[in-house]
Image (tube, rainbow over all chains, first blue to last red; front, side, top):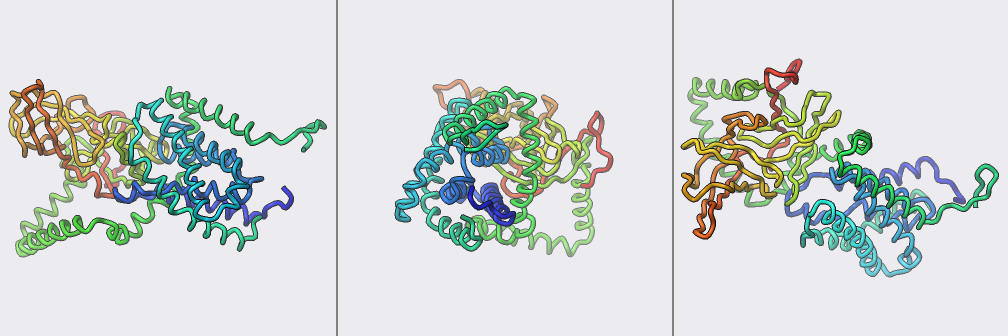
Length: 163
Length: 287
């Protein structure tokens, strides 16, 4: 809360979320679609780590609500998962920051997987959808993508002097 | 620490925020699963706010069809190539015969203007989003209540029936494919008039037809057309071709698989049908 963000910096953060959502709903052919990482979750985790005072549980919830509508899923299930993810990230953010990159990727992947587990539980409780092995494919994609996404987003953040 | 009306207050902790969010989510989920009016208002509002996102995501489809082609599998490209070569041969013959060509043009025009589906008016809609999985097979179209789309409307392509509209918002609509596990479509065998119901399986290239007894006259290769029973789908439009009939002496019913004739995973445009008589008629179809 020390130095308020300029309008341009806010727009940049918003743009990163918009890009993540577009990447999430771009239509892909069958086999590749299974391996689509959870872009929004990863970008959310990054900004929670970088700006824990500004991006947090509330932002995660609103993002999740948008995802619910875009997926056409039960209203509130993604919102719940993303709020939980933001909370977990804020909780472990000091530890996450000092991890080496590959260890960080595993930790972030685990956090996202935890929030996915929440989703799978809600789906099986409310709609009777059993968990599938193919649900784990995006979790692996998340871990692989994280180091690259982290590098790109950090570059963007440093260039825009967001802190 | 901050102040509110002269009282000094603390910012809520993250845990407090999480608990609030969880309560809000649970309330939304309960409301949504009971198809509550307020939940629908929230969904429509957010959907309208996110409409530019969907347009953005659909851009690669309309702008870079070539780039999308590159992602397709080699095998499918080869198959397409063979089919296209055959098409070229056929068209070369046709080009030599002006009459035949003229007939073909008349046929295409008739299809687009809806004469191929008597009693229905037809309009083209663009696919914005495809969600395909073992539990739901849906499309999002770029036409909604403002374009007079209504729930229960039939959606087809030139090869056969695709599905029906299940929810409508002002600018978009959701279509349930005939391969959705919740979908059932009354069909009739074109060879002998046998009636049946084709259910979705959650896989885009397969339908199943349960509840036909072992004495039913059905064999692989039979074409199933919609029977028009139930009033949702137009009668006499192709739906599926039977691929596999297995008879297990332990079971009372045949196990029948069929493949949808509509090319569910190919096009970016589909046709919406409006019955010519009835409350939902259109000012001018732009098909």
